[in-house]
Length: 543
Image (cartoon, rainbow, N blue to C red; front, side):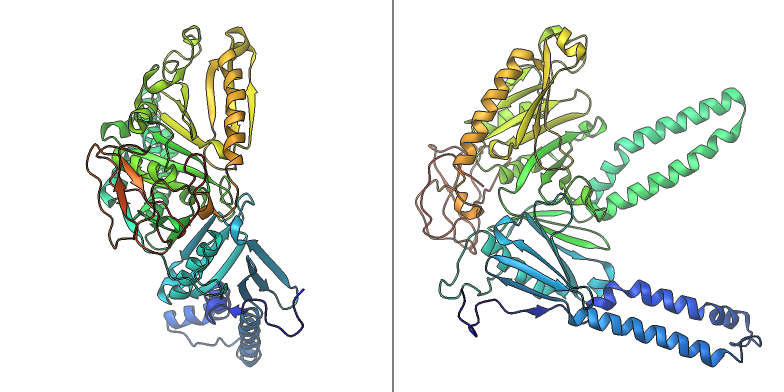
């Protein structure tokens, strides 16, 4: 128990004074529109600002409008005064409300991701909102709106450092952490983003709908079918704008804090995903994207949910909106630092576009070709020491990767046709999100054996996870070395290896032919956040 009068908690702080006005500008605009609409219209028409019918009541109306405005501003000030936040004792806490009080808190070692969001008005004032995500299926556990951009970055760095288990000053656990350096991995050019939208799935359906409308109009001599294209065109324009707005200037970087994603045209957002918080990953290639070799990557992260309560689930769960094979390999290496196989590039390449048993994949048996005439050679799975890979789709190619320790539960599904052909589907359950891990139409005996083997692999992987602090889960591959100020690129064809890093120093790479890792020209860097003087643990590298 703390000694009475002793300061044992962190300091309670307030958000920026302009925060309630940035959040509530819509209410102020509505008040101004309600009381000033008639006056503005009269001014445009050249008439007196106050009509004869309300001239006698004008003072009362002005007094009423002023009272409503004063009450709104007073409410904003009270909401700001009673909103405080604190980072102490392993928690981040936020107190709000002056009539109905509420306190929300999140454990730092359970933080799944931290986002910095800047709506357009907040960007004008140099403010930002912080969102702390935990495993609560889509609703942000704690939201701080708004802080100065510098304060938001500082607070994010401090929380990520404590969530990882770093103590910069053992005698001062409440000390702020400096922002960790980062190394940019990729950037999506706007031209590629526009091309991916024009070659997307919705474009195919709109073109098919337009062709069908033209044919029906010519056959029936009724031009009314063109009217159905109007709402489709409006919906397509809105979808294109939303995708372009959320994917514009998309950049991915790696730092000791984790993977950093930035994107947005008007409203910008900066996400930080600590290593090991990604539950499942999916790589998708639509048919028309195959012309340019483009792919899309999505992830399941606890706290983001399937769609998100704020309608931003699609963008927040996108790890790469559109990228080439080199970009995909780089992002895969960040999500899964230890691929668990001696030849990761070949295995993952076979998962992306391979057929048959290439790369060690076990596919649907030949007797099921009547149920999946195009996809039976494509549907399959492969298991490495650290993850389970599931591929499917002949036209819409898909590869799903689930780290073994992220398998929460499993289920075997078998319908009447599957029983007739002695087939079964194995479903892996992770957190809610766009990725649905499923082994499709496997042999019934093979699916049952995979069920038992995957349960054993998941159990063994979780036993090696001895701490919720992600920094304590990373296994050193070589002896510690002095951190360097720059990242040295690895040579083509050599094995890339991770070295110990100070969690707030730039990374350095080393090469050795005796350790597992990603190899080849596509990947030129790997970063593994490490605590100084961390102890070595058994088992594959955890990230």
